[in-house]
Image 1 (cartoon, rainbow, N blue to C red):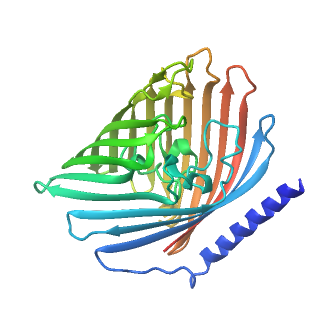
Image 2 (image 1 turned 45 degrees about the horizontal axis):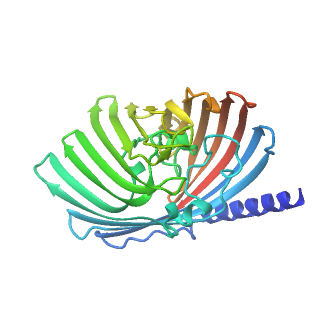
Image 3 (image 1 turned 90 degrees about the horizontal axis):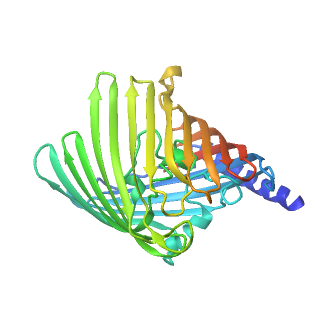
Length: 375
């Protein structure tokens, strides 16, 4: 108990230090390099407290701090280089929650060491992109290097960024799309007016430390009407046979498809939705996902840089005798408020519920505060 109290005090001290850093305008600086070179950084402090109704898991609070740095170089209008680095202290509640979903989807201390078993720390992205302009409304881009599939597949304007939007991983990306991150790969993008086609390949490692190939294609359509901008996407993915089946006797592939959409309804209200399905021959937790929610802009109360987000997700388990999870429900609501031109603060609450087939059900609330400083 004494050790837990010390840890909580340490986390609170770190959090307070970050808050003081953020709300002091003299400390938060912004630099303009030149029109070809951009260096951006985000310092994020998070503290979460879990109120768990699950046997063997005690209520507790934990925090984390993350520094993200990105360097982008545009030597020409057609060429682009990107390097993304991240440094973190703490893992918030992620290692101890009893749920199938993670309450904070950012890359934390343990995630940033020996990334994907590559003996590489802190380096998330390092890629080069060349764009061919074929006509006024047609372009074709090719990107190669260390990339992140979540940037290109299953993207969403209102539910895709754990630093500034929802924190639970099921609202950041579809958890059954099995999107790999921070490994070698390539992406080809064709844009024809309001239509986009993306084809992605990545080589990564799974939990059994087996090298596998991930292939995905996404078709997107962007609309801009009098009610507001909207994006509608459909994608499919597959891997090679490198994932254990339910008996543990053979390897199967992962495959499935999904949709992701977002639509503005005027200047204040926006909606989003996701749906996904995957094959269950390999050992997985969920076979289907349905989620959606709303985004309310701060213009409603005269502060356009504030926002509120509310989301609900339902994930259906696998129809197998050996499957543990029957279904999972997640609800999250957050309110983000601008503090200064370089900072914001978010208050977040989540409810997560795993209904088990044989064991006792698991549920609980996670209360969080997130502070960002941008430079």
